[in-house]
Each structure stands twice: as C-alpha cells, then as structure tokens.
Image (cartoon, rainbow, N blue to C red; front, side):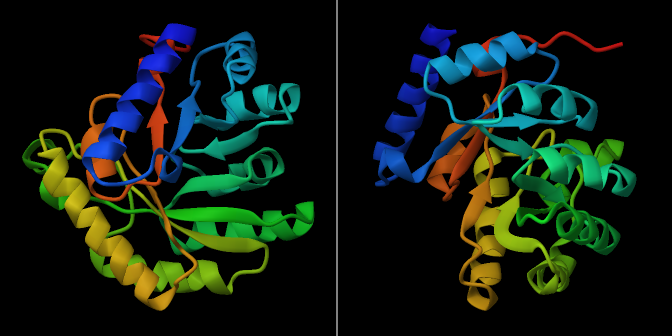
Length: 230
C-alpha cells in the first residue's frame, strides 16, 4: 500500500509539473469502496486525509471509525439516503438534480452542518461508447448546470464547491476533461467560489490534471482490484 501510494503521488507530481501546476494544487481522494476500514486506517497512517465512498452503506460504517479524516461521498445518491450521507460526509461530489439539492439542504440543516456540494456533470456527449450503449456515467446535462448551481448556492446548509465528472466509456479523456473545464469556467463566472474540479481516476488522472482537476479520485491505484459486495 505504501508503495502504491508513493507511485500515485509521483504520478500526480509529474502530471502537475507537465501542466505547469504545483503539486499542492491537486488533492488525492482515496476511494475505499469494498475495502475494509483497516485499509482506511492504513492509508491514514501513510498520510492520506481525504477518503471517498461510493455507497452510503459503507460510508456510515467506516466514517465513524475514522472521524479525523475528511469524508467524501462520490457515488450516485438517492434522496432518502441524504440524511445519512450528510451525517458522515463533508463533501458530496454527485449532486445531479434539484430534488437531491432539497434533500441535502434539509439534512444539513437538521445536522447543523455545512456540506460542500459538487455538481456531477454528464459528459456523455464526449463518449461514443456511452452514446451507443446508453451507459451514461450519470450527471446533470450541460445545459442545466447553471440552474442546478443556483439552487445549491441558495440552499441552506449547502456550499457550492464546483464540478465533478467521470470520463465516458470510449471517450478521449483529454476531450472530455477539456469539456468539463469549459463548464467549470462558466460556473466560476457566476459563482467565483466554486473552484473545485473533481476529475480523474487511476486510468486518466494525467489528462484530468492537464485540464485543471483539483481533486483526483483513486482506488485501484492504491488498493488494487476491488472485490464485489454481495
């Protein structure tokens, strides 16, 4: 694990140098989906401070065991799970619809905390395979981003943080992440505080960093191939 983390950090550093950016501009979020809390503790012992989960069921078990970490929720979120996610996570990367904004706001007010929200943007237009198979990776449509952003910015208990996306299957990552950067720039023109770009995973972090990613989400690079939960 230490070796994997070292290699991941080296990749991030090299990508930042190549892009003319400082390594401190990019935060590594360790995605621990399907891995035990003992692995989370091991990563924390190696200096990881940001950890992400895709499933509410895992988040609510692991987060209380490591409350000193900053927990990110990065998966698709049902509105009826919003209270649980808000209770345990400081950042939600997957805000993709107005109804979820309302659920998150209600939960944040009830929990008496402020949650940073990233808008998950659909980049399906950049992926031939996704378009052909219908395997959209999720997110708000490009034309609806600013409306959703306004709702988050106006909601009690929520803070608009920026955007998140997953490169579509079959896409050219540079093209997809360049498109995301354009969306992020438009968003910042109306909401200057929303400067985060959560993009890039194990296979495409270099492309994401070239196009301004501030947060990369790494699972396989740190922990290997995931097991499947039953």
